[in-house]
Amino acid sequence: MSAPSVTLTSRARPRVGAHPAASGRETDLARKRRARRINRTLAVGYPDARCDLDFSSPLELLVATVLSAQTTDVRVNQVTPDLFAAFPTAADYAHADPEKIEEIIRPTGFFRAKTRSLIGLGQALVDEYDGDVPDTLEDLVKLPGVGRKTANVVLGDAFDVPGITVDTHLGRLARRMGMTTNEDPVKVERDLAELIERREWTMFSHRMIWHGRRVCHSRKPACGACFLAADCPSFGAAGPTEPASAAHLITSDDREHLLDLAGVDV
Image (cartoon, rainbow, N blue to C red; front, side):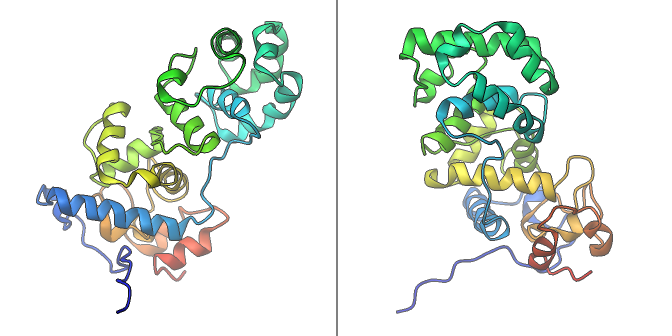
Protein backbone atom coordinates (compact mmCIF):
# COMPACT_ATOMS: atom_id res chain seq x y z
CA MET A 1 0.00 0.00 0.00
CA SER A 2 1.49 3.34 -1.03
CA ALA A 3 1.94 6.16 1.45
CA PRO A 4 -0.62 8.97 1.31
CA SER A 5 0.47 11.93 -0.77
CA VAL A 6 1.42 15.14 1.01
CA THR A 7 -0.79 17.97 -0.18
CA LEU A 8 0.61 21.41 -0.89
CA THR A 9 -1.10 24.67 -1.78
CA SER A 10 -2.62 24.57 -5.26
CA ARG A 11 -1.09 26.74 -7.97
CA ALA A 12 -4.54 27.46 -9.41
CA ARG A 13 -5.26 31.19 -9.60
CA PRO A 14 -7.89 32.17 -7.02
CA ARG A 15 -10.57 34.83 -7.30
CA VAL A 16 -10.45 37.80 -4.98
CA GLY A 17 -12.66 37.20 -1.96
CA ALA A 18 -13.63 33.69 -3.05
CA HIS A 19 -11.90 31.77 -0.28
CA PRO A 20 -14.37 30.43 2.34
CA ALA A 21 -12.28 31.98 5.14
CA ALA A 22 -12.77 35.42 3.60
CA SER A 23 -16.48 35.26 4.39
CA GLY A 24 -16.30 33.31 7.64
CA ARG A 25 -17.41 30.02 6.11
CA GLU A 26 -14.32 27.98 7.03
CA THR A 27 -14.67 25.35 9.75
CA ASP A 28 -12.11 24.97 12.54
CA LEU A 29 -10.94 21.67 11.05
CA ALA A 30 -10.57 23.18 7.59
CA ARG A 31 -8.57 26.07 9.06
CA LYS A 32 -6.20 23.67 10.80
CA ARG A 33 -5.73 21.61 7.65
CA ARG A 34 -5.12 24.76 5.60
CA ALA A 35 -2.61 26.13 8.13
CA ARG A 36 -0.64 22.89 8.07
CA ARG A 37 -0.79 22.77 4.27
CA ILE A 38 0.58 26.33 4.19
CA ASN A 39 3.42 25.28 6.49
CA ARG A 40 4.28 22.31 4.24
CA THR A 41 4.27 24.58 1.20
CA LEU A 42 6.43 27.15 2.97
CA ALA A 43 8.93 24.37 3.69
CA VAL A 44 9.24 23.81 -0.05
CA GLY A 45 9.51 27.52 -0.71
CA TYR A 46 12.11 28.15 2.00
CA PRO A 47 14.11 24.96 2.58
CA ASP A 48 16.94 26.98 4.12
CA ALA A 49 14.81 29.11 6.47
CA ARG A 50 16.59 29.92 9.70
CA CYS A 51 17.19 32.64 12.24
CA ASP A 52 18.87 35.53 10.42
CA LEU A 53 20.87 36.61 13.46
CA ASP A 54 24.48 35.40 13.65
CA PHE A 55 25.40 33.61 16.88
CA SER A 56 27.43 30.70 18.24
CA SER A 57 26.02 30.33 21.76
CA PRO A 58 22.77 30.87 23.69
CA LEU A 59 24.22 34.05 25.24
CA GLU A 60 25.13 35.48 21.84
CA LEU A 61 21.67 34.76 20.47
CA LEU A 62 20.02 36.28 23.54
CA VAL A 63 22.10 39.45 23.22
CA ALA A 64 21.55 39.70 19.46
CA THR A 65 17.80 39.29 19.86
CA VAL A 66 17.66 42.04 22.47
CA LEU A 67 19.58 44.30 20.07
CA SER A 68 17.21 43.47 17.17
CA ALA A 69 14.36 45.53 18.63
CA GLN A 70 13.48 48.44 16.33
CA THR A 71 16.20 47.60 13.82
CA THR A 72 17.11 44.99 11.21
CA ASP A 73 18.92 41.70 11.65
CA VAL A 74 21.44 42.90 9.07
CA ARG A 75 22.31 45.91 11.22
CA VAL A 76 22.61 43.74 14.33
CA ASN A 77 24.93 41.32 12.53
CA GLN A 78 27.17 44.25 11.64
CA VAL A 79 27.86 45.15 15.28
CA THR A 80 27.77 41.81 17.09
CA PRO A 81 31.22 40.50 16.03
CA ASP A 82 32.90 43.35 17.92
CA LEU A 83 30.41 43.12 20.78
CA PHE A 84 30.82 39.37 21.23
CA ALA A 85 34.60 39.67 21.11
CA ALA A 86 34.62 42.37 23.77
CA PHE A 87 32.01 40.73 26.01
CA PRO A 88 32.20 36.93 25.71
CA THR A 89 30.50 36.09 29.03
CA ALA A 90 27.52 37.21 31.08
CA ALA A 91 29.94 38.50 33.73
CA ASP A 92 31.56 40.74 31.13
CA TYR A 93 28.21 42.42 30.47
CA ALA A 94 27.44 42.61 34.19
CA HIS A 95 30.64 44.59 34.90
CA ALA A 96 30.82 46.47 31.61
CA ASP A 97 31.56 50.14 31.13
CA PRO A 98 28.27 51.40 29.61
CA GLU A 99 30.07 53.76 27.26
CA LYS A 100 32.02 50.90 25.70
CA ILE A 101 28.82 48.96 24.92
CA GLU A 102 27.10 52.12 23.66
CA GLU A 103 29.96 52.84 21.28
CA ILE A 104 29.65 49.40 19.69
CA ILE A 105 25.87 49.08 19.47
CA ARG A 106 25.06 52.71 18.56
CA PRO A 107 24.12 51.81 14.94
CA THR A 108 21.25 49.60 16.17
CA GLY A 109 19.36 52.57 17.64
CA PHE A 110 18.04 53.11 21.17
CA PHE A 111 21.58 52.22 22.21
CA ARG A 112 21.39 53.65 25.73
CA ALA A 113 18.27 51.67 26.63
CA LYS A 114 19.72 48.55 25.02
CA THR A 115 22.97 49.03 26.94
CA ARG A 116 21.05 49.18 30.21
CA SER A 117 19.21 45.99 29.21
CA LEU A 118 22.44 44.16 28.38
CA ILE A 119 24.12 45.14 31.64
CA GLY A 120 21.01 44.18 33.61
CA LEU A 121 20.80 40.96 31.64
CA GLY A 122 24.39 40.08 32.50
CA GLN A 123 23.83 40.85 36.17
CA ALA A 124 20.68 38.71 36.32
CA LEU A 125 22.39 35.79 34.58
CA VAL A 126 25.33 35.96 36.99
CA ASP A 127 23.19 36.40 40.11
CA GLU A 128 20.43 33.92 39.31
CA TYR A 129 21.83 31.38 36.85
CA ASP A 130 25.60 31.23 37.45
CA GLY A 131 26.21 33.08 34.22
CA ASP A 132 24.33 30.58 32.04
CA VAL A 133 21.29 31.32 29.87
CA PRO A 134 18.25 29.44 31.22
CA ASP A 135 16.43 27.06 28.90
CA THR A 136 12.81 27.57 29.96
CA LEU A 137 10.29 30.19 28.91
CA GLU A 138 9.40 30.92 32.52
CA ASP A 139 13.00 31.79 33.44
CA LEU A 140 13.86 33.62 30.24
CA VAL A 141 10.99 36.11 30.47
CA LYS A 142 12.16 37.09 33.96
CA LEU A 143 15.36 38.53 32.50
CA PRO A 144 15.66 42.28 31.79
CA GLY A 145 14.65 43.18 28.24
CA VAL A 146 13.39 39.67 27.44
CA GLY A 147 9.78 39.10 26.41
CA ARG A 148 8.06 36.05 24.96
CA LYS A 149 9.26 36.78 21.42
CA THR A 150 12.92 36.90 22.46
CA ALA A 151 12.47 33.90 24.75
CA ASN A 152 10.95 31.79 21.96
CA VAL A 153 13.77 32.73 19.58
CA VAL A 154 16.36 31.57 22.12
CA LEU A 155 14.45 28.40 23.00
CA GLY A 156 13.92 27.38 19.40
CA ASP A 157 17.31 28.23 17.93
CA ALA A 158 19.71 27.81 20.86
CA PHE A 159 18.05 24.97 22.77
CA ASP A 160 15.93 23.22 20.10
CA VAL A 161 12.79 23.72 22.20
CA PRO A 162 9.82 24.45 19.90
CA GLY A 163 8.51 27.99 20.12
CA ILE A 164 6.40 30.38 18.03
CA THR A 165 8.08 33.75 17.52
CA VAL A 166 5.41 36.36 16.89
CA ASP A 167 7.21 39.32 15.37
CA THR A 168 5.62 41.93 13.09
CA HIS A 169 5.94 39.69 10.02
CA LEU A 170 4.44 36.58 11.58
CA GLY A 171 1.59 38.50 13.18
CA ARG A 172 0.75 40.26 9.92
CA LEU A 173 0.81 37.08 7.86
CA ALA A 174 -1.18 35.06 10.39
CA ARG A 175 -3.97 37.66 10.25
CA ARG A 176 -3.90 37.94 6.46
CA MET A 177 -4.05 34.17 6.13
CA GLY A 178 -6.98 33.93 8.51
CA MET A 179 -5.14 31.95 11.17
CA THR A 180 -6.03 34.51 13.83
CA THR A 181 -7.95 37.75 14.24
CA ASN A 182 -5.94 38.86 17.26
CA GLU A 183 -3.45 41.72 17.40
CA ASP A 184 -1.94 40.82 20.77
CA PRO A 185 1.21 38.69 20.19
CA VAL A 186 0.46 36.36 23.10
CA LYS A 187 -3.02 35.62 21.72
CA VAL A 188 -1.61 35.18 18.21
CA GLU A 189 0.93 32.70 19.59
CA ARG A 190 -1.87 30.79 21.33
CA ASP A 191 -4.00 30.65 18.19
CA LEU A 192 -1.12 29.43 16.02
CA ALA A 193 -0.14 26.81 18.61
CA GLU A 194 -3.60 25.29 18.19
CA LEU A 195 -3.16 25.02 14.42
CA ILE A 196 0.46 23.97 13.87
CA GLU A 197 2.11 20.80 15.18
CA ARG A 198 4.36 21.59 18.15
CA ARG A 199 7.43 20.05 16.53
CA GLU A 200 7.00 22.56 13.67
CA TRP A 201 6.62 25.74 15.73
CA THR A 202 10.17 27.05 15.36
CA MET A 203 10.55 26.35 11.65
CA PHE A 204 7.01 27.55 10.90
CA SER A 205 7.98 30.86 12.51
CA HIS A 206 11.13 31.18 10.41
CA ARG A 207 9.30 30.28 7.20
CA MET A 208 6.51 32.78 7.79
CA ILE A 209 9.01 35.52 8.64
CA TRP A 210 10.98 34.80 5.47
CA HIS A 211 7.77 34.87 3.42
CA GLY A 212 6.83 38.20 4.99
CA ARG A 213 10.18 39.69 4.07
CA ARG A 214 10.22 38.37 0.52
CA VAL A 215 6.64 38.15 -0.76
CA CYS A 216 3.90 39.17 1.67
CA HIS A 217 5.18 42.71 2.28
CA SER A 218 3.48 45.01 4.74
CA ARG A 219 2.37 47.78 2.40
CA LYS A 220 2.12 46.00 -0.93
CA PRO A 221 2.18 42.18 -0.91
CA ALA A 222 2.98 40.37 -4.16
CA CYS A 223 -0.37 38.55 -4.24
CA GLY A 224 -0.33 37.67 -7.93
CA ALA A 225 3.09 36.03 -7.62
CA CYS A 226 2.56 34.31 -4.28
CA PHE A 227 2.76 30.51 -4.09
CA LEU A 228 0.28 30.55 -1.19
CA ALA A 229 -2.37 32.56 -3.06
CA ALA A 230 -4.90 29.73 -3.32
CA ASP A 231 -4.80 29.23 0.45
CA CYS A 232 -4.96 32.92 1.38
CA PRO A 233 -8.32 34.58 2.11
CA SER A 234 -6.67 38.00 1.72
CA PHE A 235 -5.55 37.40 -1.87
CA GLY A 236 -5.79 40.70 -3.73
CA ALA A 237 -6.93 42.69 -0.72
CA ALA A 238 -3.78 44.78 -0.51
CA GLY A 239 -1.54 43.82 -3.41
CA PRO A 240 -1.71 43.39 -7.19
CA THR A 241 -3.20 40.15 -8.50
CA GLU A 242 -1.73 40.36 -11.99
CA PRO A 243 1.32 38.04 -12.00
CA ALA A 244 3.72 40.24 -13.92
CA SER A 245 3.06 43.30 -11.78
CA ALA A 246 3.29 41.29 -8.57
CA ALA A 247 6.49 39.57 -9.66
CA HIS A 248 8.30 42.93 -9.75
CA LEU A 249 7.72 43.22 -5.99
CA ILE A 250 9.83 40.13 -5.30
CA THR A 251 13.51 41.04 -5.35
CA SER A 252 15.24 38.53 -3.06
CA ASP A 253 18.04 36.26 -4.25
CA ASP A 254 15.65 33.30 -4.37
CA ARG A 255 13.22 35.19 -6.63
CA GLU A 256 13.38 32.71 -9.51
CA HIS A 257 12.62 29.78 -7.20
CA LEU A 258 9.68 31.59 -5.57
CA LEU A 259 8.15 32.61 -8.89
CA ASP A 260 8.53 29.09 -10.27
CA LEU A 261 6.76 27.68 -7.23
CA ALA A 262 3.93 30.14 -7.85
CA GLY A 263 3.72 29.13 -11.50
CA VAL A 264 4.69 32.61 -12.66
CA ASP A 265 6.77 32.85 -15.82
CA VAL A 266 8.11 36.36 -16.33
